[in-house]
Length: 421
Image (cartoon, rainbow, N blue to C red):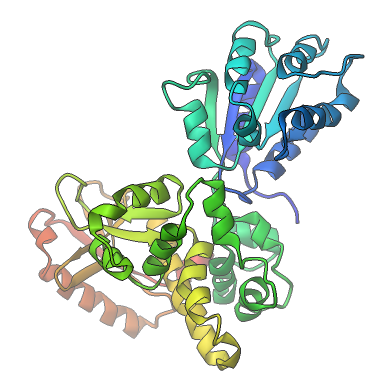
């Protein structure tokens, strides 16, 4: 698959190379960190090594074996200080990426302190060390915790995020305006590794079946792998995601499904949020301090599909008619389409109170003194349907308490026609 997008990340790497020092790259597994760094290093004659899960001596041997073809040395390091000393003695200016860095620190807890000393006193001027990892929580503990040896040593922490729908279409050769293209995107999200399963002429149902429902499918154990990477272990984490995927979005509903007190879930919910697996939603204008109206949603489209569609229906999928399979995918895609629509407007959120629910409320980009209130529909509406939805939206607003604080409002309807824009 061709390399697409990532222009902003490549600019950050170029800027870091001008100054040297330490740059930390992190993001969830399979988001494309390694491809990004290899692409950049190849253009800069850089060095690359991916750490392995093994004992310390074997890890050092692996790193040295990866780098040796591009190093000028007759020495064979036995310790990390010796490996770092070899890098210091190189005559040329270099850029080096140590990928899956948490594997190294999990085995040797002294490595961050050794690296700190080397960065402070022996890193050659202009040389760039890229340290990358998939565990968001562990990377934060290593570089953002005030007590950590490497705290404050990085010039920048670069988070590699999932890519958007436009990049997906460019990479897979699909038309953005086609609804089937978006439903495929809803099955694979912004994770480039999953895009490799998209085939020419394949519809969204066939893609979902190859990824999720076939014999020994690629995605079968993906949630467990992702949770393990983030250090979120135990059956309770999966149980929470199962509950949220099946519609329990309020904290009280999640606790009820698990048969436990709501207070018992606070720490686990926070872990899942920190790991970017769950997202916590507040109604527009609300804050954690001022409202108890909190909803939890599964953030990533693929994980949402896993717990919303795959897990509840995996045993019966093969007996479903084609129309029923398409409806399940369509309904899931509708939730992803809402996310995409809200992402188009800075500050956009849902709003709910009583029997009123608004899909999108945001400051109007055309008039900062005005509020944009929109209904989102995952289909192409006729002119008559659009007018009917608009009238219903205005009726909702008339019964909403937000109207007293925001008298200047622009109403809109967002449907599938925005995909090609």
